[in-house]
Image (cartoon, rainbow, N blue to C red):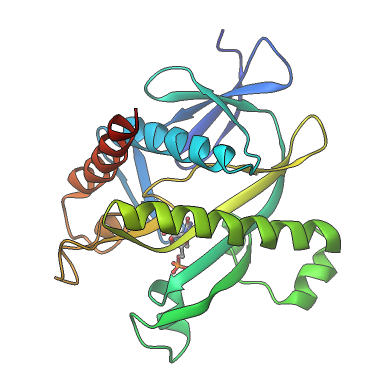
Length: 244
Ligand code: TMP
Ligand code: ASP
């Protein structure tokens, strides 16, 4: 079933499948931050991110938004559409933190209404630089109409996920999406949606460090990375067992 390795990124490996329109994606335990200047291996992270991503892709699809996800293959592998990756990182922010507060005078914790959309050029060697509208046009990465669709989809996903996590007592602070074109020529959400590329704050805890349930625990050396990721999956699974 698993064919040759097509691509290896920092947190995932992509393998060919028997069906040339599909790929197998393996979620690794490797963790990196600050453009891979900080690295570690976190036992169990691959399994948690694979399961969390699958559940969130399913939720997004149920809301009529297309993703590359097809099905879980095992605990650390999913089957997805083979896509042509658009080299953009699309970040949407509900609450100000992270690079927004390092790079601007906006105070930590400011509620952003409407949510702020930031675009970055996906290129590790360049350190994923932020893009202006004019630089995006100059690079010619995506057409104007596709860019409008990317923004619309990102804002819709944010609405769906923000409401969903709110019901699990979690604040969705911000997250990053990636996009691609599937074999049918359709724009779809790609990559993963997990505590590696989202920020979650626990509404049941007001301590500014303890409430962090995402990769910031690794970035900031707070410890308890796996416990935090487990807590996210636990709340998602509890919710789905209540629903069925
Ligand atoms: P930032 O505040 O560091 O710009 O991060 C914004 C969001 O994007 C946060 O949820 C983490 C996520 N992110 C990634 O998924 N990959 C990255 O390389 C970076 C820098 C951030
Ligand atoms: N994913 C990026 C890296 O590996 C950065 C981050 O998530 O903070 O370096």
